[in-house]
Image (cartoon, rainbow, N blue to C red; front, side):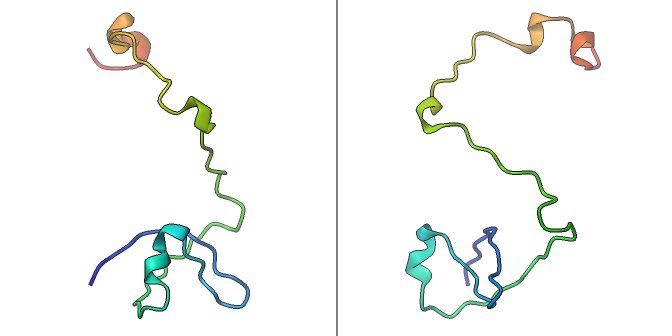
Length: 77
């Protein structure tokens, strides 16, 4: 048995939508465990993603933490 974790919404008809990369599992028998959120619908923050044109563009220039005293970062020295 194999475990796959994903987040989805259950339709009003009871259907569970699987992402496209799970298409190989369509029609197969599965054992499902539901972990339902205690938060009301819409209470979770919207998950944001950066635009694709920015992918791989970030660069780290040096040691950021040692650029200022540790106290300024709220870290113990």
